[in-house]
Image (cartoon, rainbow, N blue to C red):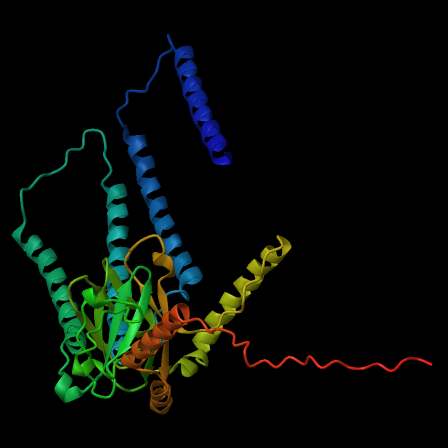
Length: 392
């Protein structure tokens, strides 16, 4: 209701200003006016100065954003081996972009002032300049070629993994609205076959339980990966297009229904090490400061305060996949190799989980069809009459 009232007020103010303008125009009838609707030398000069002012505004906003928001982007602390190359390429690209932007904007606004229109001045015209066109076409082409080749090596290392030679840990990431599920390939390091038509009960990923390679597969609701070991993620989607996004590992790959995509990287910083990193400690402190301020407001309204934030790696969805897209996330833990083995050893295979669920379902069914009857025949009732002596 408040928004509607504000909108109505703005509309009425606009109408009032328009009517005042018309009234002012009517009062000028009969007066000599020099408004020819054609810019004169003074107008052009004013526009030239305004262009300089806008240039200063652009630079001021740029500097402000760097100073105020510069610590928010993840431009450091890459937690994967290839992440350093990605960050380096990002820094090179950003430096080039801002350098070119600074120079071209300065020239654009300077020329708008220097060559502003003047009475009697006619612009010279030429159809083309081969030398100039060669220069401004060659420079961007060379720069882009260098950037592409620089990133191609990292991309090739990520996308083309020789599983027999490198022997990475194979983990399936299964996406569905609005949830992630991980499936580990077990001791044989080979994932069992899967099909959405086989989804039933505990077998929420549709794994073919008759496949020999599926006998040691493990399903988990959070991802654990060991530091210093290459991990190959096989990615599937049950329903719509999702995107597996792990920002701290500089990893992202689309999850496409009907096909399997993949992404590989080597984690280089454990969760505990990242929590102790000075930059991350500062970020967490800033987040908790904001949460404390918000908690004061919530408590004042009689609501529950926010819990303190603790850093964790996260798997996010980077595609707008539906109404709960914002909340589609999964915890990722980078362990030492020793802790990873301990964690994996304590997990139950999918085959075992299905057998346990089947047994529980059978026991429940038997309990319904054959309820336990209370046996009253063996209960001995004491019917002995006790003689009471007469009172004297």
